[in-house]
Image (cartoon, rainbow, N blue to C red; front, side):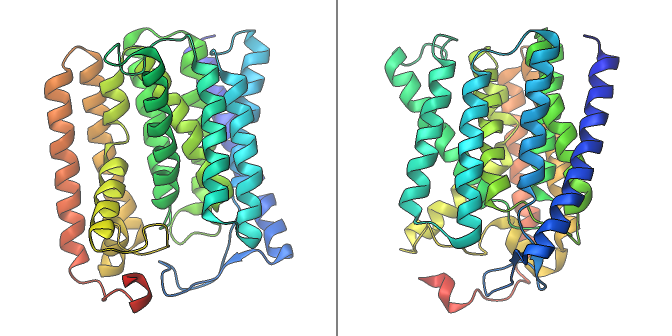
Amino acid sequence: MSWTVLVLACILVALGAWAATWAVREALVRWCVYDTPNARSSHTAPVPRGGGLALVPMVLAAWIAHAAWTGAAPPGLGMAVAGATVLAAVSWIDDLRGLPAGARLAVQAGAVGLGMVGLTGEGSVFQGWLPPGLDAVAAGLVWLWFVNLFNFMDGIDGISGVEAGSIGVGLVLVGALAGWPWDALAPPALLTGAVLGFLAWNWAPARIFLGDVGSVPLGFLLGWLLLRAAIAGEWVVALILPLYYLADATITLARRAARGERIWRAHRKHFYQRAALGGAGHARVALLVLACNIALIACAGAAARDHAGIAFALAGVAVACLLGVLARHARRAPVPPPGEMR
């Protein structure tokens, strides 16, 4: 494989994802599957929900096609594909009629466990700091949290596409600098292509939403890619690339837990949500996240070049600046409805 072939493949996947999203949107309209605004929503009009029905199969098909064409696949790819497929199926049911939080978490834990089986023997996620058994358990818990935080953060137009595409580009850059083989470079590149095709429909004002059928398996697949980077020795990179999402989701969850709120309930208290409600708007907030992510990609590249300490420090500064900007916009947001205070 060459860079030319990989770029052409990504363009083809992007076009396929764009066309598939159009077809899925038409079907969702016919089926009357909408995300209807409520007191906790960040949008004001019904929008078709279920774009993951186009995006996730496109990513998985691209990964499988690449593996079949080249005869090489990253270890554990089959387990990752199987886990994402199960999550997409269960999340689609959740989108249609809702499932108990405990049932969703159990299925997610099962998918993560399956994915960890595929990574067994590949190396240590925590680089030998933990015994092998504890390393696998800790990595699985981190992966499970990432799946959920990615779903939590899918609350305004374009933000999930920006985040997923940024992580994909960052992993391709780091992989190129570190000399990863093509079978390791292709998955994040192809995922980025599919995300860009979907983002054309999801950019503000969005004409379709991912739904849980998209955000949950997409978070799962990104978590798999990040864990593989950590196993390859780029654990600082695996922290830097999703650092804004990690910070926003974790800080917001901690604040809500400290106030005694029901942390599993939908809300509008993330930094990005409050900023959008405060007048910044969906597109501007997504662009601010993109600007921060570009800085994080640069920091990840520096970390891959043996400047991990300074790179992580600069990444923290970039995320802190973004949170500060979002918090400033959030001061003009309306007071959350009473239902969000429970």
